[in-house]
Length: 113
Length: 116
Image (cartoon, rainbow over all chains, first blue to last red; front, side, top):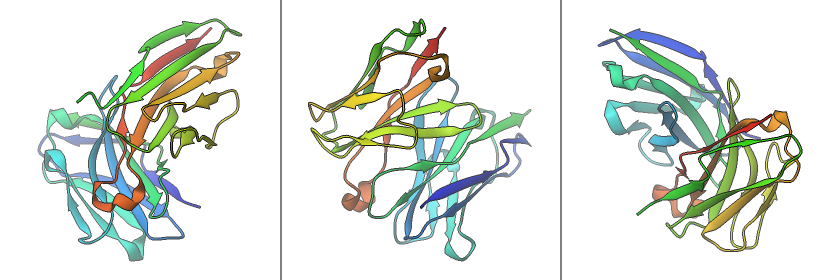
């Protein structure tokens, strides 16, 4: 069975600082991995995804994530935080042969001026 | 291209009342899903469908029913609403996983349901 753990329910950074949101997964098969962002009172928007191929994945708004199989991790980073990055971020995993996404509990990112 | 549309956006129900949430997608996706979102718990899968006429239970199916009579629509029903069903409900759709690079979920904007 697949599961996702996001370390830290709240992360606060200063504007211009590095953003690091942690995600570890468990999967019995090679996984598909995703990061979604949810702005207040909105639905979830895909930031980036890893399916196969290059393990460093670049997404929208300057975010990127690296799939590390040995560490079963898929951490999300952005070199320089912007105020508009304040939102809730969800990591999700899906088995390569099935469609159901399993979500982590979410990490709320706050950006201080 | 509207993507995934959910109706209604907000609803307040009394305990014991019934209602149906409608999800419609115009991307010809095979798979559709209903999730509920509660603080600190992320999104939990209620029911899903892998094609027209099919449905299956997810992680938290009790108290809900679904139907997928048409490929583009996925309905979520609450027969007798309870306060524990107060939540934000999200519908999503996806192409079949075998499409590989294009695989991913498209979410609706959510339905905020309060049961009093």
